[in-house]
Length: 285
Length: 290
Picture 1 (tube, each protein chain N blue to C red):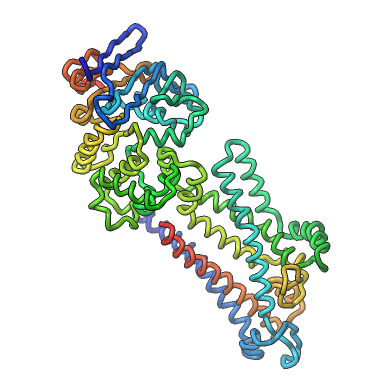
Picture 2 (picture 1 turned 60 degrees about the vertical axis):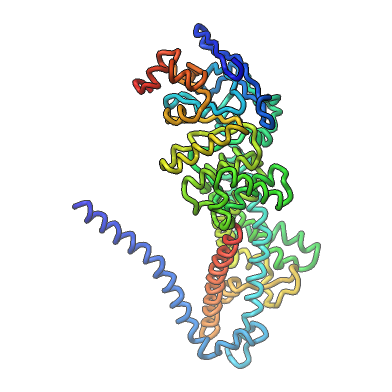
């Protein structure tokens, strides 16, 4: 079963563990760090957003996180780059690591962590500056002091997302003049320019029209060879189309939890959990 | 009453209220010009700028009606006050908005409000009793441009802090999230993202503060020395336009009184110039930032 992901689930303690058989050495040049969570839980004050998350995200694959609203998908995504720290009273417990980086360690360098683990938000969020400045500000922060190098990085990333030809003559114009889909591709390019190893995407297509959505999907597929992608989506058809692995979340007693993980094709074909089956069929959720 | 009738009634009422404040400005202008017409016709507009100093006499030919020294003094005191207050006010606002949390933040806000509400005569007294003696050690008489500027600075810092904090608060909260998501540190976020985007509100605060400093009377009368002369250093005593009006209006009559109205008109004109210049400056800055 080389290159596959095998899951063993133990429902009595609501914990799933998975054995990773594949490794990235099959893909020369790509990044191999994987994201691991063990007994991870998140509290906002007294409210428990999710509990007992045990996963390992396979590198160089697209993993989709699906589930009904309020099951902690976005909270989980925001935990991975510690954006939950911005919410007063938030408290992460358990273990969470990316490669050798202990994400929950108090000494974790958040600036470097957020470079390595890039984030694309649900709504396109370019800075209301020129397209060029949108790239230069974060690149400067991450130590690229030469303007020409920053320009090269910007050009490369814009080419990677297929936006270069559309914007190369208007780099000094405001990024807000772009269409929604272009803005979202710009945001993805901006994140890619920092050379992240893991890309977190929070429903990157949900605020876009079908044509732009399709473009972003193609873009995400093209990223698969070089990046590990973890995306939240409400669109099950989309998850089915583009993801390799699937994480299905649910709300139990008001708290989010993982109910099933595995290869997307397998889960859609034969879900192990009754809840998953009902959710995928649209009966629940 | 039908809904549409209510709407149009409200619209009329609100429109009337807003036009009142515009009308008031026009009336003030008209009134000042009307009152200064006597001076303009009897003394002549050019003498207010060509006469070497201000020494009004009943015999208009013997008197001196130069306002230039006082115009320069007004601008000097207010500008120096802004130069002192702007960085302090901005730093305070950045500290309150980006670095303070909870009770301490509220405490700082309250203190700022209290300083904003201090009567200017109290600040003037403080300047007279505490600040002027210190400056006296540097050079007599201590009553000076600098003394006025420092007290005015204390007075306008709250204006700057309040408008700067609210300019930062008005920024889209998604900006913080996006920046954090990109691993952008606090310093760069403040300097390269938040401040350029809030520049409009921040500069409006500066302009309001400058206008307030130019118009302040009590403080300058108390600590600036009231000597009509062209200031050559920050430690020279000066008399401002506002101070001049306050000091002489009580006993002035005829052309002298009318000349004071004219200086009031010039003061209003200078404040308006500051507002317009501020707006224009802001426009060029905004284009540069984006």
